[in-house]
Image (tube, rainbow, N blue to C red; front, side, top):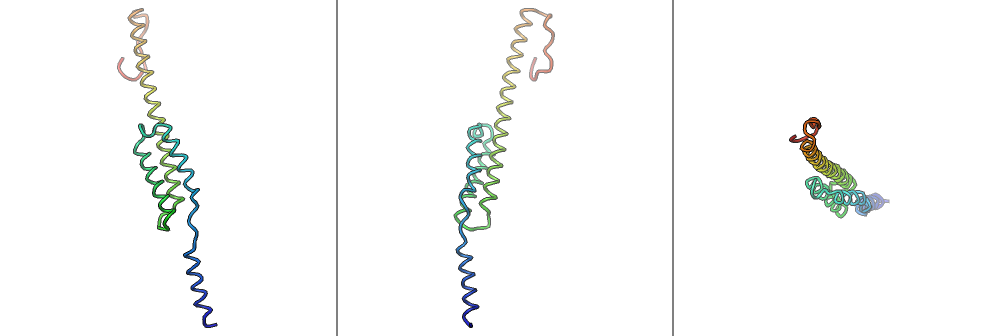
Length: 131
């Protein structure tokens, strides 16, 4: 009986040390979202957000290996959110670029029509940029 209490304490300590590592599948969402961000053009249009997502993903992977203060699931979720932000920024940049190209084309067409038909073509309104 006198060894029962120390044996229980020893078992509890050993059980705490034998806690399994976190499941590596927690990184899958971050991996998938980062890949989508890269395909969406984040390297060109949202490099800071993409770099932050990659950094968070690396920290999540490191947290899987060592039981520290950081939660792999939390870091992986943050990496996925940062990658989603990179996707949105990249799509926004592409959309702005497309808009600017179409506005330039519209201004060019307006100049051509004005040259051809004179004042019968009225002024070009509500198009960004020079007119």
